[in-house]
Length: 107
Image (cartoon, rainbow, N blue to C red):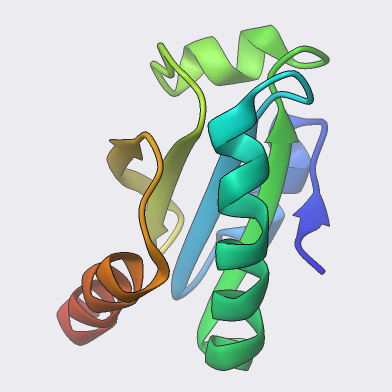
C-alpha cells in the first residue's frame, strides 16, 4: 500500500534515493479513483524498485502547489530525491508501466 505523506520531511525521506512516484489525488476525483487500482498493481509489480506515495490535495494544498500540481490526478516522479517530472490525468496500466520502465532505465 502506497505510503500516505503529509509533510515535506516525509516526502524528502521517502524519495531520497532511487525512483519514487508521488500520487497527488483527491477523494472527490473520479479519475483518481480509476488510478488507484492501476497504481496498486504497479506497486505490487515493482516491489522495492519504485517507492509509491500518496498525497491528498484537499488536506495538503501547499505541498501540491510546491510541486506545481494544477489538476488531479497528477504523478510527480522523483529521481534520487529530486522532483524530475510530472504527469497529469489517468494513465492505463500498460502505458504507465512502459513510462516507469523507461524512468528506471535512466537511473
